[in-house]
Image 1 (cartoon, one colour):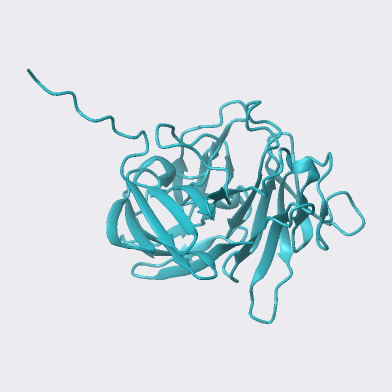
Image 2 (cartoon, one colour):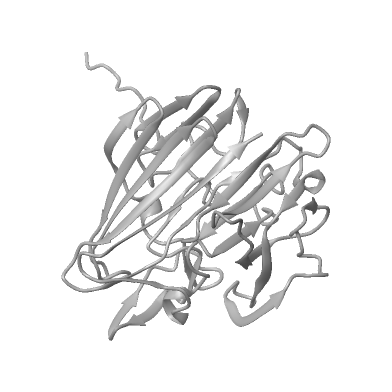
Amino acid sequence: MPQRASPISPTGEQWVIAHGHQEAVVTEVGATLRSYTFGGTDVVDGFGATEWSHAGRGQVLAPWPNRLGDGRYRWRGVDAQAALDEPALGNAIHGLVRWLPWRLEANAQNVVALRCTIRPTPGYPWSLELRCEYRLRRDGLVVTTRAACAGESAAPFGIGFHPYLTAGTERVDTASLLLPAGRRLVLDARSLPTGEIRDVAGTELDFTAGRIVGPTQLDTPFTDLRRGTDGIARAGLEDPVTGRGVELWVDDRFRYLMCFTGDTLEAEHRRRAVAIEPMTCPPDAFRSGKDLIELEPGESWEGSWGMRPH
């Protein structure tokens, strides 16, 4: 009599890495950060092994982050049409690799590195090789990504990441949010940039000094990031009562932070965590060209970001 096979996770293979009191789980599908804990306490609001990633939880967003209006764009004389996977707004969203299987390149106790090759399709008619490494160190999680043009013609590129940070509060309303950004992009009814950029100083969206989120609703791209002498910009979320929190940092390759308080999510996830999303370019960059990375054949790009629980 045939034996019943063990169930396979919807996100494929699961790789667990650890360092001290830290543990993270990265999945085969999308090289997704499914879980990150410190002392058994959640640092990110992830998802279980029997689930798949809803609302972008922990996903890698490439070769473009966020939204692409109509999914249609033209780059260096080449026309492309991506699938509209946000049909209600008529947008393509978060790129292509978040649903693809990534192949394991390296794995040790505290590190896992995965690769994904993008081959030409109607939505992205170029070749790209991506490598994403998750490394736990004494001072937290470091995510380093390398992208290389793998074809005979140049390729446009942008990348983002979608962690939902939690400070353990029941709702984000009582948490303190820090966003080191002097300006924010104005979006239209389709959540696409209008081209207008406004200063946040003195407005409801000014979190540069850190303050309680309260009723503020965010689905907003921020820029003009304020950096330390080391070139690092640091954001964070904290419970002011318990002191529990998490810092998210980005190097100078990431010029934007998308912040989302989850107001449109299903009830059990609504306003439970704050997505602070490192991005190299703004939404709709494949159409606007704003801060779009252009990789010539054989050329590569590398950038890092990470999190520190406290």
